[in-house]
Picture (tube, rainbow, N blue to C red):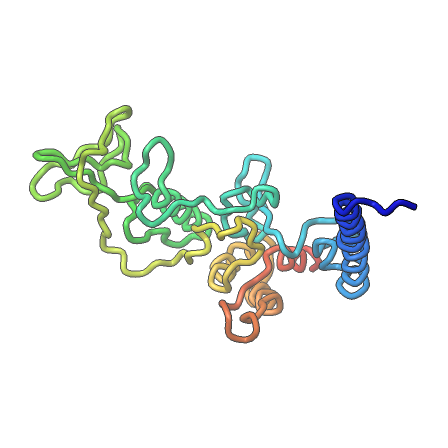
Length: 269
C-alpha cells in the first residue's frame, strides 16, 4: 500500500487524539466522578435536598423565604437573611451596591435598603430598628448641600426632614424630578448608640443564597416565634442551640443557624 503523505498522517493522528480525549474526558471521567459522588456523597451530590413528610421542601444549601401570600413574614417561623436575587440559584449574585451608594437616584440606595429593612425587622420583633445614618422613617439620613440651600435628598415631599436645620439653613424635603447631583453629599450619623438589629438581618450575602443566619439574629426572633407557637422561650432557644453550626474548620467565620432546619424542627414539635 502506498504510504500516506505526511500531512495526511498528521491529520489522522490529530483526529485520533481528539477521539480518545473526547471519550476519556467527555464520557469516562464524568461518569467516574458522578459514580464516586453518588456512592460516597449521595445527598450532597444531589443538592442536599431536605424532605419532610415524604416531599422535598428545600435545600440545606440554599435559603428561602418564610412569608405569606402578600410577602409578609409568617410570625411562627424564623426569617431568613435578605436576598438580592430572591434566593434564585440561576441568578446567584450580589446587588453590587457599595458603601458609597447612599443617595436614592431612581431606585433605593444600599443605605436606604438597609434602613428600611432595619425598621421593618425592629417592628416585627418589637425592638428598636434604629441604626446610624438612618432616619426614623427608614431611609438614608443624607443631605445635599448647596449654597444657601440644604435638601434631605432621600425624603421625598411631603415627608418631614429628619433635621430642621443644617449650619443655620432650613432643611427641605426632596422634590420628585429635581436633580441634586451637583450638591455636596453629607451623610448624618445621628445619635444612635446601640443597634439591636444584626447586620445579617439587613444585608444580603454575596451569593444571595445564604441559608444561614447569625445566632444573634436567631435569638432576636426567638421571643416572637415562641409567642406565635405558644411555646416557652427556653424551648425555642434550646432548638436554636441544637441547630447552630460552629466555625468552619474550627476558626473560620462565625457560628450560624440553618433557618430551614430550625423551622422544620419547630414544625416537628
